[in-house]
Image (cartoon, rainbow, N blue to C red; front, side):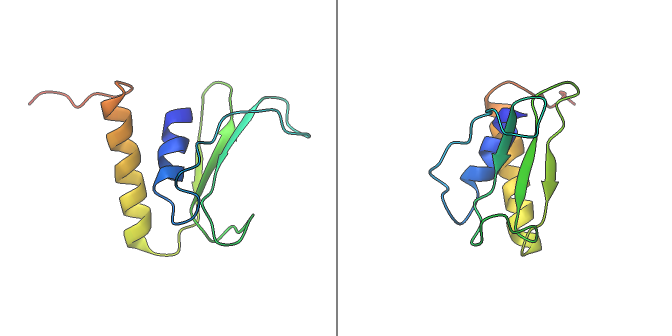
Length: 92
């Protein structure tokens, strides 16, 4: 989940060089990771991914200004998960 959120950040138009890390945030029981390379901080229409660091480790992906950007970011995130060994593509 952390690697996925980091990959979403790296595919963002703003602050793509920033690496998000899970940390304490007031109001949350668990550490939270938030990835959002957005033009307007906190904008819900722009692509972001976030979630609490606890089972079942769900990242909530929301927003996206264009289909192409969201598709590119998700594909980049899947590639990162493949490269880091978090997921595998079954042999055919």
